[in-house]
Image (cartoon, rainbow, N blue to C red; front, side, top):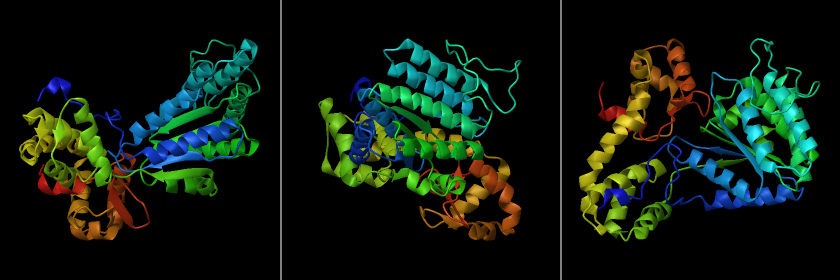
Amino acid sequence: MDPIRNPYAPGAGQRPPELAGRDEQLHAFDVTLERVSRGRPERSVVLTGLRGVGKTVLLNALRSAAVRAHWGTGKLEARPDQSLRRPLAAALHMAVRELGHPRPDEVEHVLGVLKAFAQRGPTSSVRDRWNPGIDAPAVTGRADSGDIEIDLLEVLTDIGGLAADRGSGVAIFIDEMQDLGAADVSALCAAAHEISQTGLPVVIVGAGLPHLPAVLSASKSYSERLFRYSRIDRLDEAAARVALEAPAAEEGASWSADALEAMYAVTAGYPYFVQAYGKAVWDNAVGPEISADDVAIAAPEAEGELAVGFFGSRYERATPAEREYLRAMADAGSGDADSVATSAVAASLGKRPQSLSPARDSLMKKGLIYSGERGQIAFTVPHFGRYLRTHSD
């Protein structure tokens, strides 16, 4: 079939042509936006899940919903080597610009507070002061203490007040939220807690790996009640069918029942895999109906691309010692088990668990594995264990 008309889109954070299986989250967020706009109490949102389940795609879809509701929005991606202050300031700047306000002096004051927040870090000096591109003079004595917890609350309070004047709200979207530093996580939770009590229309929407709730809880015990957690998982068979059939129908093509069954067997419903296999099958099929034979013929091509771009690129980031640990995890696991015991990994390598801590901790920092509970470890990427068992260095 015509590759130019191929509707499937396997890409990092790239929205598929049919966002199937996420209606519940989209509807719940619409309710959140409306309730907060009306001054009703509502929790911020945290999305968690493995790599490739569509967290970033859903995060972007929720942001689009906020834009349609005339909210001010901003987005950032957390990084383990970067503090929250500067990227959050840029995201908040965008949100203020989207909001607008009939009184320019009010906007200028808030932008001045935001500029002070952006430029004031614990080690800021005149020489290294960052210019955030805000066309307003920095306000002195507001959000510029250097304490991120105090400053964040003050800047969000002022921006929330601006949004309330507009009868709207502000939503900040944070991807890879588990990579925030401990002080930043604490400040974000504390600010969201205070803001929720004042009734200001500010919502935080975070997305991260499955252990993100544990990261938040370790920072502030009340975070369990502060956020509404939504586990984003693989699609069920019905949703996976919709993700394949709806885009094909738009292009005058269809999938046979056997082909859809075969696709679910090879993708297990993981959204990224659905798109990757869908693209390969489309390019190899004669059509207009895609058959199970088409899936069988194209599957090796899709698997090859995943081996290089999805699995291999992550494996290449690991050092030799870390690769040894990853392979031991794969060997110690049963099939595609969610997690394995760290003691089982150590036993597989014939080493003491303590001696493997550096490799394990480094892999966690790189986002390749995570610990959902004490003594257990798991891959952040679905089917990574299977990949390691079938591929050698």
